[in-house]
Amino acid sequence: MLKGIAASQGIAIAKVYKLEPPVLNIVKRDSNPQEELEKLDQAFTKTIKDIEKIKDVASKHLAAEELAIFDAHLMMANDPELRNQIEAMIKNDNVNADYAADAVATQMIAMFESMDNEYFRERAADVKDVTYRLNCNIAGVEIPNLSTLDEPVIVVARDLTPSDTGSLNKEFAKGFATEIGGRTSHSAIMARSLEIPAIVGAKGILEAVKTGDVLVLDAINGEIIVNPTEEEIKVYTEKKEQFETEKEALKALKDQPSISKDGHKVELVGNIGSYNDVQGVLDNGGEGVGLFRTEFLYMQSEDDFPDEETQFNAYKAVLEGMKGKKVVIRTLDIGGDKKLKYYTFDEEMNPFLGVRAIRFCLMKKDIFRTQLRALLRASAYGQLGIMFPMIATLNEFREAKQLYNEEREKLIQEGIPVGDNVEVGIMVEIPAAAVLADRLAREVDFFSIGTNDLIQYSMAADRMSEPVSYLYQPLNPSILRLVKMAIDGAHAHGKWCGMCGEMAGDEMAVPLLLGLGLDEFSMSATSILKARKLVTELSYEEMKEVANEALNLDTMEEVEELLKKKI
Image 1 (tube, rainbow, N blue to C red):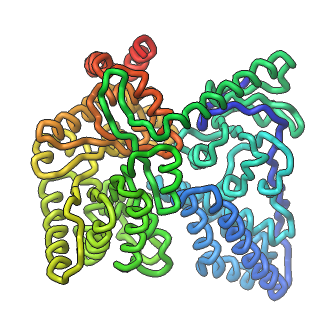
Image 2: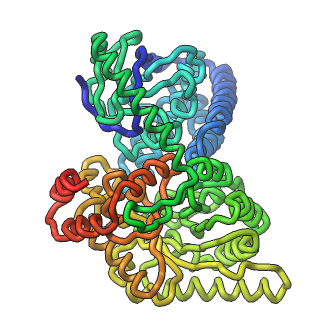
C-alpha cells in the first residue's frame, strides 16, 4: 500500500494510465538557419493553437480562476522576447531550432528557479510546460492528450501540468495520483474543481505501477492499493458506493438553512471568480457569495485595466444571477503573485509585503475610483457587500471609505441609481487587523477573515514553499486566537464576521469556527453541502466549550487530538 495526501475526496477503482511524456533527444547540430527559423515559426503557431484548444476544452469544466493559467501560457507563447532569443541563437550560431529553444528555456527556467520571490519560482513550471510543448512541436512529436481517453482510468504521473489537468476528460479520468504535490498545489486545486478523487505526494508510485495495472485510489484516507485482491476490490467498491450514496444524500440539504441541532444559524456561501461560477454556488445550496475575486477580470483583460462599463456588466450579472442573495465583492487584489499583462509593477525585495491590494488601489486612485463606480452602479441590482483587501490600519480603511463615499455622491448627483443597503467591510488577513479588530469594527460593516494570508503572515512562512509548508497550521492555537479576536471585535459592535479562506471549508476546522461564533463560512461551492451536514449535526453550545478548550492548548497537534475526541 502506498500513502499520499488526499487532495480531492472520493474512491476510484480502475486501470492505470501512466502518463509518460515523450523523452526528447536534443543534440546540437549545424543547420540551415532559414530552414530552422521556418520550423520554429510553425512550432510556435502550433503551440499557440494547442494551448487555445486546451483552454477551450478546460472552459467547459473549470472556473475562471483556474482558466487564468492558460492565459498566462498564451502570453508566454506569444512573448516576442522568448522568440527573439531563440531566433538570435539560430541565426548567430547556425544551430538547430530545438537545441536553441531548449538552451533558451533552460536559461530562463534556471533564472526563475533561482529567484527569492515565490511567484517567479512558480513561473519556472509554466516556462517548462510551454517550452516543452514547443520543442515537441519542433520535433513533430505528439504529447499525450488526456482529452482523448476512451476508457475509465486512473492517471498516474510525476505531476500534472496545467495543460494536463485542463485536458482531463472527467467521463474517463476517474481519478489521479501524482508523485509530488501538496493540498494547495495546482493539480490538487484542479481535482477539487473537477470533483474527481486525487492523491498527491504519493512517493514511489511511478516505480510501483505500469499502464494496465489496477489501482484502488482511496482519496479519503490517502491510500493506494496496486493490483488489489478480489476481496479488496469488493470492500472498496462498497466504500465507493457508500461515499456516492452519502454524496447524493447531501443534495437533500440544498435548500435547507444552515442551523446547528440546538438552533444556532450560520450562513454557508461560495467563493467565485466570475459569473460562470454562480450556478455552481446555487446548485450546491449556497446562501450567497462570500468572496467574488475581481482580480480575474483584470488579469483576463488583454491590454488595459477594464473600463467602468465592462466591470459594471460583470458585477451586475453576478448580483442578478444570485437572485437577491448577498454577494460580497472584493476590490482589486493585485500584486504579489498576481500580475497583469499591461502593467509593470516596480521591483520590490518582497512584493508579497509590498504594493498590493488596497495599497495599490490607494496609490492608483483613478483605477480604484473606476471600480468603485462600477460596483456602486451594480449595487442597484442586488444585495451587495464591498470589502477592501489587506487592510492593516484604520487610516487605510478611512481613506478607502472616503473614496467610496465620494463616488457614491457623484453617482447620486448624476441621477444614476445606487443601492441603499450596500455594506462596506474589510478582509482581516494581516495580524495587525485582527489585533485591532475591536477598533476597526466601530467603522466597518463587516469582517471577512482571509485565513490563507493570515496564516502565512502570522507564521512568517510562505504556504507555497514546500520546506516550510509544515507551518501552514490553520488549527494552531495562535491562529485560533487571532480568529477569535476578529469575531469578538465584530460582535462587540453588532457587526457580522465571515471567513473566506481555505479554513472555512475545512471539515476539521468547521466545528471550531462554529464554536468561536463565526457568522458566515465562504468556501468552494463543492464544499458547501458537506459543511451544512456537519453544522446540522453539531451543538453550538458544545462547540463553544470545545473552542474555548482549544484556545488554551499549546500546539496544533493537541487541537487535532481534542477534535478527534470531541467531534
